[in-house]
Image (spheres, one colour):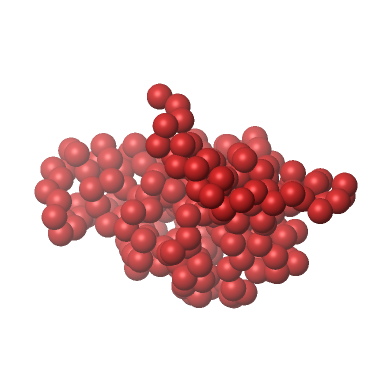
Amino acid sequence: MSTAIELPTPEGTSLTLAAFVDALDTARREVCELHAELVTNRLVTWTSGNVSGRVPGTDLFVIKPSGISYEDLTPQALSVCDLDGKQLAGPLRPSSDTAAHAYVYRNMPEVGGVVHTHSGYATAFAARGEAIDCVITAMADEFGAEIPLGPFALIGDDSIGRGIVATLKEHRSPAVLMQNHGVFTVGKDAKAAVKAAVMCEDVARTVHLTRTLGAPLPIAQADIDRLYARYQNAYGQ
């Protein structure tokens, strides 16, 4: 696969060649660096999992190649794809989840990053076919609701993407547990999607530990709403 790529001209944008090259280089670097967070936070094993991110100002995204180890990942090794999932640049074949990522980007234009992991605690809920109830204030802050369960779907086409979009389209949560598979998260950019993946595993672990002590105490929906609104609109700088 050639690393050459033509300047895209998506409707409503007018990037110069220099601006395009800069946007692509930045996206490749940021997405490459974010993969290290999956390893640091123990969300992946061996070569599993992936992060993708839109290239701002274009109808392109970059994604981890299939089967490449995290220590061997470099910005230039990332695959560049259009929103139909067609690879346009990069020396290696893109992730087997590329069609799912592409479907999300096509149908959720507000999404700038997508992450997939098989993190242990959250995937255990997915294997049970069970959503994660919102029973922790930190979960109300980040997710604003339960972490929902998406349908079972096979890898290889956009079936997983369809399940992600159908589940998250009308849901506050940036994370979905795809039944018998694992976690997919979305965000305004790749960093936000990685954060959601980290938080998803953290709350899944806490809810699991809580259940070993007894039934978790529910949080009233009105309080979940208030917590979510405060965190999303007033927390941080």
